Figure 1 (cartoon, rainbow, N blue to C red):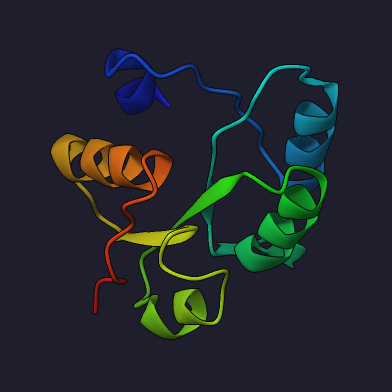
Figure 2 (figure 1 turned 30 degrees about the horizontal axis):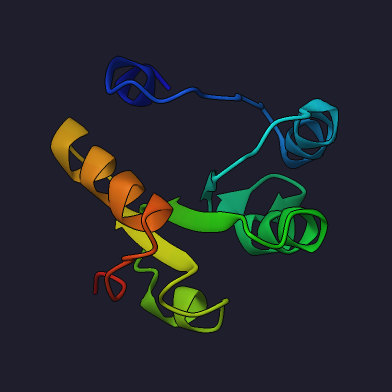
Length: 111
């Protein structure tokens, strides 16, 4: 969160998938990007993304994980809607991936 706020982004934070859904439902403005871990307690980042994209079809998704993400991301909504950033990441690599995702320029998933 601090990295993205320092880069000038407005961040809506949530500690769980259920909280993320509640925060998104309560937010009346546009949400341009979901940045979520692929592995979470109780659900997956993919399941969370499906729920939020169903409610906000223009939402772009950026998955993050310490595990290789290419296969799971390629099953998602396609390279213009879904991106992947591997952990650990630098401030520069995260902000670049966020910018690419928001602009619809998600690169192919990292190996």
